[in-house]
Length: 505
Ligand SMILES: [Fe+2]
Image (cartoon, rainbow, N blue to C red; front, side, top):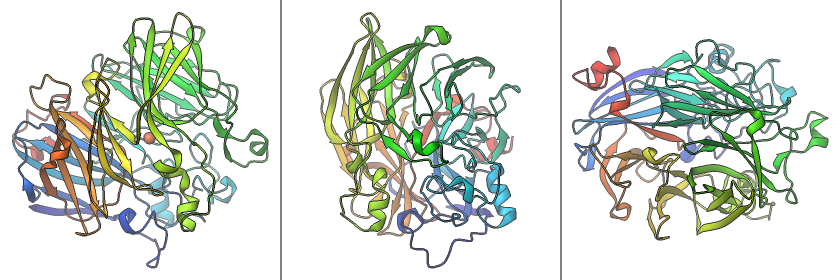
C-alpha cells in the first residue's frame, strides 16, 4: 500500500467526549488520506469492476453549540476506485462555506437540528429551518461525471472530483441554481436521459419545488409544488414519465412553529400524500394521491405498470417512537434514528392514474432501510433491492439483505458483532446484462480490528461473503449514503494511463 497524508484538520472535540455519535464507531476522522493499492486482506480486486464508489459521512470537527445531533457533522467524502484489478482510496472533507468559517472561528457557528436557531452565534445560515450550517454531509450522487454532495435540510450542491474527493466549488447550473431555497438531499439522476431531478422545501409558500436539470447542465424546469404548510420531505422517486414528490404527516407542529420552536410531530390521523408530476409538466398537472399515514425516509424505485405507478420505499410503522424507558439516555434520545424503533419495512404503493386510488402492501417483514438498486433500472421495472439492516436501538448498519421482489426471497449477511457497514452501492459488472450481475460495495467500521475495510460482494450471492476485502489506512467513522459511478460515466477515466494520472489531468 502506497499511503500519503494529504490533509488534516484541527479538531476541537473534547478528549473525554462521551457522545455515542462522536465516539466508538462514529469517532470522526481528522486526517485526509491518499492510498494507492490498499492491502487486499481477502480475495482479489475483480478485474471486471470499473468505476468509483463514493460515500458521504457526517464527520464533526467542532463540538456543537450545545447538543450534537448525528446529522449535524461536517461532510467527508470517501472514494474507493477500481480499475484493471487495482484499487485506490481517498478521503477529503467537503470544503463548505460553513466548514471554512468554523475553521476560522475554531468553534461551531450555527445551531444543529436539535438546537434552537437562536443559539447560533451567526445570524445567517442555510437550510429549510434557517440558521443552520450547510454541511453537505448527507448524500452524494454523480451527474455528468462530477460528484455532487448535498444537505438534507436543503443547501448548495458541492462539486466533488470523483477521483480525488477534492471540492471543486458549488454547482451553479449556469447561474440558475435556486440559491435562496437550495436543493434537498437525494436529487436523482436518470441514467437513460442524463437528467437530474430534484426538489427543495422551506417554511415559505409554496413550501416545495420540483426541478429538472438536463444532460447539458441547464435548469430547464422549476415547478411550484404547493403544500398546506411547511413539511419535511427527504426523498423523491421518478418513473420514465413522472416525478413523485410527497407530503407526509410528519412535520413541525404549527402551533410551536409560530413561537420559533421546531418540534417534529407525527399527525397520525392525517394521510400520506404523493404528488405525481409529469417530468415535462407544470404546476397545473400535479395530481395528488392519498395513502396510509406514515413517513418514508427513502424510496428504492418507481416505475409505470399500465394505468399504475408502482412506488417502493420503506414504510415506517412508527415514525414517532415513544420513549419507552428502555436503554440508556443516548438510546432514548436518538430512538428516532433506530430502524427497529421506526419499524422500517419495504412497502409498495400502486397509484392508479385512472381511478386516483392507491393500493398498498408490505413487501417484507424484515426491518431494513437504505435500499440500493442497479441504477440502470432506476425509473424502470426492477427486481432487486439491496438494503441495510440495523443494530437494534442504534443508528448503525449491521448487515445486508437482498430483497427479491419477484419471489419474495431474502438473502442476508450479518457483518458480526462490532462491525458496521455503510449504504451499499450496486456496481454492475463490466459488460453485464443481468440486473444482479455485479458487485456490492460498502465500507465497514470494525471495532474489533480497530480498522476499516472496503468489502466487495457478489450481488447475486451476498451470503457467500466478500469476494474482496481491502484495508483502509485507518478506522473511519460509520456513515450512510453512497453511490456508484461506472468508469464510462467519468471523464478522463480511460484517457489516463492510471487513476492517479486521471486526477492530475
Ligand atoms: Fe437520506
